[in-house]
Image 1 (cartoon, one colour):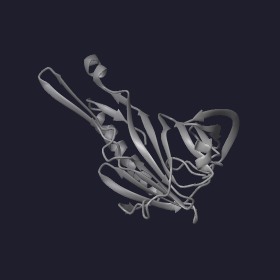
Image 2 (tube, one colour):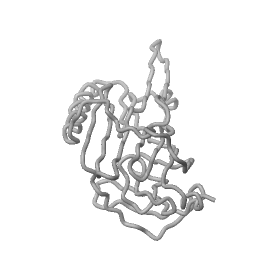
Image 3 (cartoon, one colour):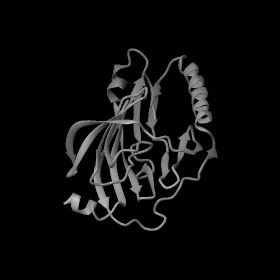
Length: 234
């Protein structure tokens, strides 16, 4: 029974399925191409955790890659949608986070003090993978975030930056993204299984946001001349 294992350890790994809804704009009138395009992208992700630290990342590199080819009027068009290679590390003892972000083939590191999330617990309950879970909604945010956590695994962590609930988060939904646990494996992890990201240029979160905004603005201007445009929010 999951609750018996939970009483013995607060260490292990959780496999999730992370799904992102895709918004892809194509030239007007190209209905055949529109039919071929995916409406979502899914990948298996992994949360490694202990009482002291945790790491959230894709389970395998290149997971969830979408590759679509289309031919029309003698022209070949290929759309390849690859997930960025992002990692999120949390140091629970020192209340720090290190986020490794890939953007346009470049890597950045954001090392900062963890910002505590302000959750509101609800009375809603359900069972996920045999664990009784309670619903919580994130307050004071421009986006609606709903989480389901289980107190039977008493670690205040979850996927990516989401944490600070009295139990492990097994399901999340926000914006165009959902993250749902498919497997929980409570076990002792090998030494150095959880490694703090170190790849990339050190920037502040504000600096990284400006880099993204400037590049997306530039791409938007170019995309306005016609052609295929994709919007994927991470």
